[in-house]
Amino acid sequence: MTDDVDALRVEDLSISYGTAPPSVSGVSLRVRKGEIVGVIGESGSGKSSIALAMMGLLPDSARVTAGRMTVAGAEMQDATERDWEQVRGVKASMVFQEPMAALNPCMRIGAQIAEVLQIHGKTDKRRARARALEILQLVQMPDAEKRLSYYPHQLSGGQRQRVVIAIAVAAGPDLLVADEPTTALDVTVQAQILELIKSLRDETGMGVLFISHDLGVIGQLCERVAVMYRGRVVESGSARRVLEDPRHPYTRALLESIPRPSVPVRSPLAVIPALNDFTEAPAELEEAS
Ligand SMILES: Nc1ncnc2c1ncn2[C@@H]1O[C@H](COP(=O)(O)OP(=O)(O)O)[C@@H](O)[C@H]1O
Ligand SMILES: [Mg+2]
Image 1 (cartoon, rainbow, N blue to C red):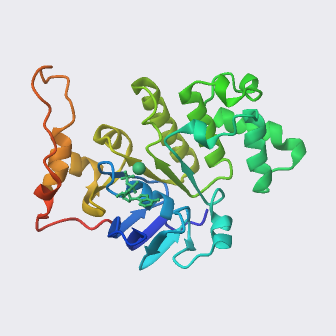
Image 2: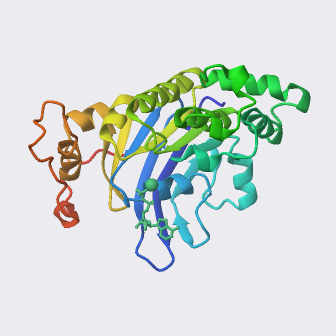
């Protein structure tokens, strides 16, 4: 990893599908190496579109424009599929919400990890199994050696997500994009996966773009956060500042909608008001970078 390169830098990113109005407009994001940056917003605000754009994985119907798009040090705004193949899975990789969909159900997990290592030229066939075991241990898989020969269906949801993360970090990427990776997991397992992502960041120095609709998760994990609303970043800054002193009314509404243990069960949760209530942005908003 070169020292002077951000894990991700994108400026003025816009994405539209077909003839529909843009799903993402004028979004700028920066993830420094070793930093975990959160992107939060409700369903449909454009989070996954951004994640997929950063991996060159949007469908052909999507139009992407950006003033600048640097992914793990590579300039990608006019990248071809061949260019993306040099980056994806090697310098930058992605973890999705549903681990089962990312794994091959008919292949033992040790073989799946070994295959990825060989594809990226990180090891030869002879050493692949030993290296797969190391990586499974890196993601703190209990009984890693035994589980090398398991099929995905023999693992719990949390263990499957560990395997997916193992495959994502196998090639030592500079950037990990995680799109709601814990949403399908129960709360205890969710906390373990968040800890794992943090410790992998600490060990490898990779940058992480972490997408969530859950402010609690963002607060636990991220150093900085960008709040998305209807395809735009409406507020960004240090996670602490945004959570303690939210400036945009949408962020405030998001915070108020988090259930707190102290709230009596029967008092209704704050409901996020209808979309048009947030069209006016406050005067001062921090830059995303
Ligand atoms: N493949 C697609 N084709 C057309 N529209 C899409 C596609 N993917 C996403 N969109 C639209 O883009 C908007 C943002 O979606 P998405 O990026 O999935 O948001 P989020 O991840 O925040 O829920 C939505 O209005 C959605 O309908
Ligand atoms: Mg999404």
